[in-house]
Image 1: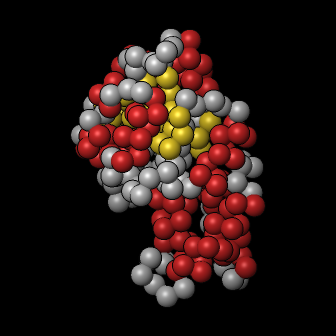
Image 2: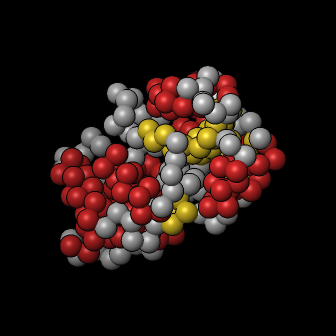
Length: 216
């Protein structure tokens, strides 16, 4: 029997705190090149932007720069070696997921992260989402709505029956484009390019996971 509604979560910076492992991979490349390691808190604001944002923070590289692709591949290879060492669910998230299950509300993950990393993180965190849509699941990344449409299709729900929870402006934009209810979180990474979550036109901005239950 299909669920009557669902909550979909972004992964990095929303469901799970992956910043320490991402920073470790970045700092491995920096120390190899004789550079000092960056504090995790300095890397954290770029963690939701993936390799593109992290290489910008660590090396000042953009995707158009010579050598970017080789550095990106080296970063992803290193991250893949130790993808879930320090990664944890954010405080209060495990309790929220249990409550959603008890209320028979489906929950899933929609992330721009590659499936090669996402599946391992989900397994290590010992969570059981009803659907997982990754950055390589459709031809498009968020803020394009295609990943969210795929998640709704997998859950056999119309998009308006789904909430999408994220820590990045792209998450809100994708949810709006898909006809889902966008919820922004204050505990995430918040790229310096995005501004204040309260300015993202989300249906709500929540300070901790338990607050989501009031919106359901």
